[in-house]
Length: 58
View 1 (cartoon, rainbow, N blue to C red):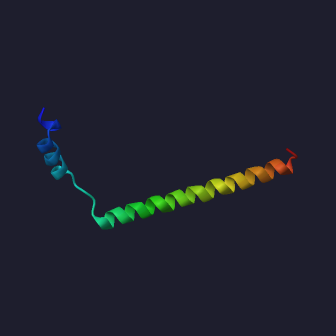
View 2 (cartoon, rainbow, N blue to C red):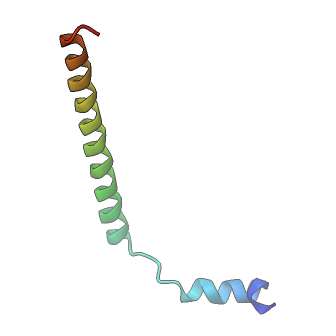
View 3 (cartoon, rainbow, N blue to C red):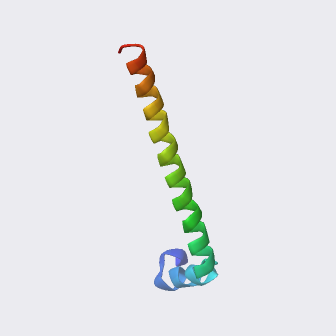
């Protein structure tokens, strides 16, 4: 099969639209902000739930 040859792989790599550095940093920044937001959200959920459990005596 031609696709599994070195020339086939190089041809497919040339067809790929690789992201520009600006797009890569922008998308990575969005991902980092989203992960931080979720981390803070779940931390606050844990604080609220543990406070509620202490309040009811568990």
